Image (cartoon, rainbow, N blue to C red):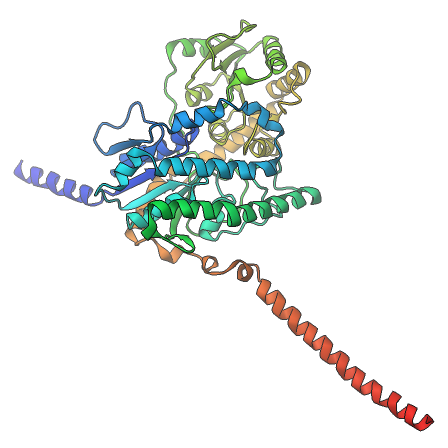
Length: 515
């Protein structure tokens, strides 16, 4: 018995010796971002690490073993809601995608400043707490990278939208605009010449805006709060690892440098039993169930009256039952086959075998979850990356898209009938689901391994590509082009002068003879 006790003590010592103290910062005041951050934090806790998560939200049922600590950014959510209440998000559908650049930069500066000045955040960074690694969601909050310098720890960045212009430059990842569309555009990888032209303009606009406006503002915020961790180039830090909320089953294949890792789908949990009323609702739906949700940021009640009436009329004609995530207690004109609720366990509903279709706004989390469970979609995109996500779903053949601007009863009914009665959409969704599930390693285990890896190898500088050491004109070979151009121009000039000298003396001698 004594020997067994000693063995247990030794095993605990080894276990604790491998435990890391990890800081996870997801400061975006949006519920979908917290889902990603909290899922990552909980997964790291389950792997045996101590995690402190900084977010405007809190987990209502946190892990009980004491390894999970929440630092709530009080007031952040309310600040965002005060901004949102003056904006009908459905009006953003018609916004020019180029206008999103300054809009997102403005929001990024507001949220970053609110984070750095938050009382709970300042209490954390002014304490004597140490961290072995810092994990930050990159979402127009470049100044927060100073935390890696402050804690003298490796920096892991997380991209909630996969590889994009927001994160590629952090690790020197190539992103050819010839076949990689910007996330604010509704293009797929098969772009025509006009679309590629617009895409190039979007890339250039983002780069110029970030270089001359957004980055200086973020550097100033970082310098104000952490002056010792900022030089003339900005926060003093290198990105050791970039975790991407993407996967080949959801996104197009694109280039990745060695320290970029796909973990898309890590937040999806094994399905649980539904609450009794929902279980009965779905079980008794002999013709199937349609699940309808516009995500956590959009309020369906803000849709125009014409759009709401068109949806109600089209849904009321269906044999299928409908679960509609609705933000108010009542829905005037609700058909008998429609059940509303302010919240539904989305993942568990999509896992039910009677669910035939998912009507969605095209958010990346919803798209990932529907592919995980093999359910086709009808996308009604509104803003941000939703249009591109929807276009990719159509191109991949597991869904159709309908513009909120063109939504009417006839069009909606035709699309619903096509999706419900043409098996190709469900077959393609199942095919994509099989790809997502065909993994050697679970995505959360992969994230845990790589976070531990960069700590073990002191930031893993051997994964850092040389592109990060080049200026923009060196990276794009502008200096080589200018050098070659100068050489060619010199040779042409020398040839011209040589020919001139060979030809001109003859003309001169001929003039002398004539005289």
